[in-house]
Length: 183
Image (cartoon, rainbow, N blue to C red; front, side):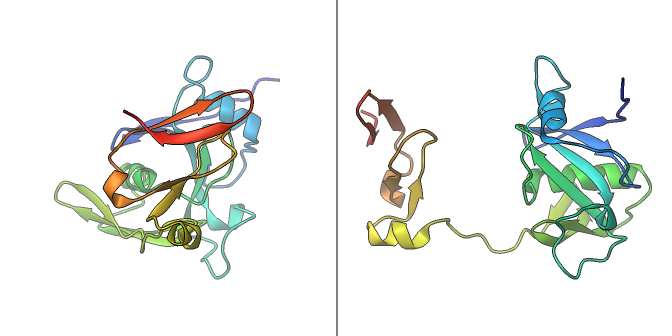
């Protein structure tokens, strides 16, 4: 059986997305389908997929969201569900503008809560909220600002602001993995 999925392609600050308008929430998008669509060789290609739908059509929305609010159903390129993508919010705003659904601003629902997007003279602005470091307590215990976990490495690499710009090389032997500054 062949399924036709209407889509658009958008990019924001060097991230590109497959946009799937689904206002009525009728398109079933499983992880495999999303990964295929985001594949740059076999599919459309993109850093992620954004299904633009109403909050009422999403199972895992935060409590208290207006069910009729536009919802950014963001998926990573591997098909996994994510809270949102900051660059993607502006792509959604452009799509909503072109579809006649946004004039000066819109409250966009995401898994990370509602993000107000406002038109500016040169695009869109969005308040993503305060930022924070993950694993901040662990980094502080190690005397660093943050901890970088390299996929596949058994131990996280502590980082400090003074060495942040230093490239980190990850080397793996049969017995151990280490993180060390490049020379």
